[in-house]
Length: 239
Image (cartoon, rainbow, N blue to C red; front, side, top):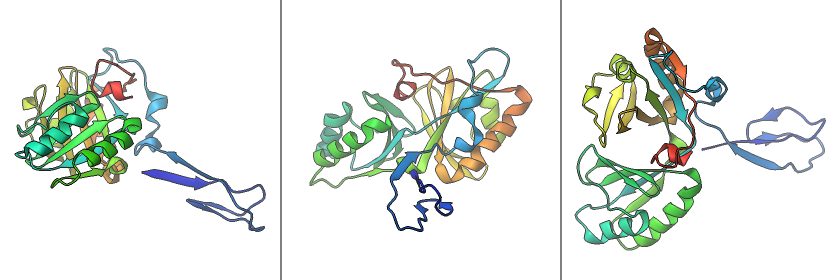
């Protein structure tokens, strides 16, 4: 989702979100830019390398691409279309995900998946999936403006989730993705490896979810982790 602002000319009226007032009627340049759902918390300025001083480390994995893929998993043509673009067929095992050359493809329902990819790859993936599935009973929707995710690591990573949700998060082993409720927000929690878990939630709940997790993490010591590009990681490699 774009947070777009127009730059008001010198001496102009008040600057409004999306608009600016110019007494002379002169045009203004449209300068849209992306803001993370958690930008107001200043996480990147607080980030530091992870060490043993805190039991919980968290940070947002900002501005990724989120593409909803819908279709019939029993349809060989649909599976072939997805595999042609993403390199893998959609996973059919409930609460699972699969790595792709573009990121990860998470099972959501028997006929729905969520592709997490780099924002720069999103338009190309969407266009190719739509073209490959043309004529099929399928749908591809860009939901990048509506979602974000947080990465939790540290020795007490699961304790934080147990404070805010009723699911037995210890059962989320590597390769599993579970949809659940934490507080009043729906979340999708998935694990790539033993180091940490990723939590996807709606942008509209960002100002609720982060303070909820932050409060639950305080008894164990909370650090804002410095997330760096890792070419070998299917999600951190998207940064």
